[in-house]
Amino acid sequence: MTDTKKTLPRVALPADARLDTLAVREGLPPSPWGENSEALFLTSCFVHPDAATAARRFANEEEAFVYSRFSNPNVTIMERRLAALEGTEACIGTSSGMGAILLLMMALLKSGDHVVCSRSVFGATIKLLQAEFGKFGVESTFVAQTDVAQWKAAMRPNTRLLFAETPTNPMTEVCDIQALADIAHEGGALLVVDNCLCSPALQQPVKFGADIVMHSGTKFLDGQGRVNAGALCASEALVAGKFVPLMRSAGMNLSPFNAWIVAKGMETLSVRVREQSARALQLAQWLESHPAVERVLHPGLASHPQHALAMRQQNGQGGAVVTFIVKGGREEAFSVIDATRLCSIAANFGDVRSIITHPATTTHGRLTEEQRLAAGIGQGMIRLGVGLEDVEDLKADLARGLDRLAA
Figure 1 (tube, rainbow, N blue to C red):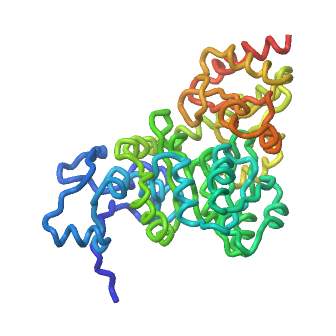
Figure 2 (cartoon, helix red, strand yellow):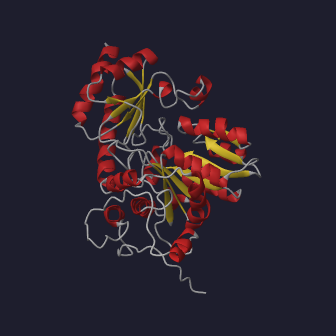
Figure 3 (cartoon, rainbow, N blue to C red):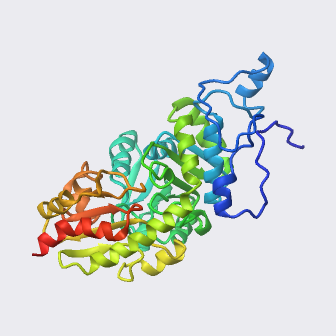
C-alpha cells in the first residue's frame, strides 16, 4: 500500500550535496515571504483550518506543526540540518545535552536493564546513570574508555546500551567506535556516541557503526556560547517510534529561539572547528615544551596514546580541546588559571572565546575523588577549550602563570 500521509516539505538539494553545503542549506523551504535567512517562529501553538484537520494532526496521521513542545519549524530546521551533517535519518532536539541523555535513557531503558559506559565520560552523565537511574533499577558498569576487552567482558544478557564519548572530556581519550559497535550488536545492544568534542565537522560516528549520536548543542554547534541545546541523531524508527512519543509526554524540548541559534551556528561549524583545531594543535605542541607542564593530552599530538586511531576517525584532526597537567596540584593549577587575562574562566567549550577550566572542581566536582582518579582527573589538570584568538596571544596568556611555576 502506498503511504499517502501528508508530510512536511523538503528543501530541494542535490542528492550528493556535501557537508558544508548541507550545513547552510538543509532545513525547511522558505515561507511564502521568501526569506533567505530562516525566520523565527516564536509561538507556542499552531492554528488549524478545521477541527478534522486538527484531529488528524494530533493523531500523527498528517505531519504538521501542532504544539511547540514537540513540533516547531525552527526546531525542525535544526533537526534536519544536524541529521544531514551526522548522516542519520532523523534527529530530535532537546533543551540541553543532559536533556538528550535523559530522553535517551527514559525512552530505551527500564528496570532490570544494564548499561556499559566509559568511566571517562562527562561527570554529570556518570551521576545520572548511577544516582538517578540506579534508584529505578537500571544497572551500570563503568569500564576503561580505551580497553575493548573490558567493554566486551562487561556485556550481560540484559545489556541494552553501550555509551561512549570520544574524545572524552577532559582526558581526550579516543575509543574505537567500530570495535564497540561490533560488541554492542553482537550482544543485541545499541551503541551511543557522544560527539560533542568533535562535532560532525570532524567525525560522523554512524560511519563506524554507532546507532545513536548524542550532542550538547551548547558547545560547537552553537559555537558562540549563547544557548543551551541538545540532540539525538538516529534512525527514523528510533526517533519517531521512541524519542518523539516520550518528548510529547515529558517535555524536555528545545525552544524555538535556541533551535534557531544552533541552526545558524551550524552554518559556520566546519570553518570554525577546523580553524580552532589547528590553533589547538599549535598550543598543544607549545605546551609540551614548557618546563612547568607535566603532560599534554590532545589527539593531534603524536604523543597521544590513541593518535593514530583519532586521525582515522576524526578526519586527520585532533579537535579544539587541549588538556594539560601542570607540575604540582590544585594550588599550581589555580595559579595558572588565575594568571590568565584573555581566557574565560568558565565550564563550557566550543566557543569562539577560549575557555579555561579546572575539571576536578567544576565539571567533575560532584564525583568522588575515587571516581575522578579512576577517570584520570587529577588536581593539577587544566582543560582549555581553544577559541579563535590569535595563537601567540593565547600562548602569552598561559605563559603568565606557567613561567612563574617554572621559575
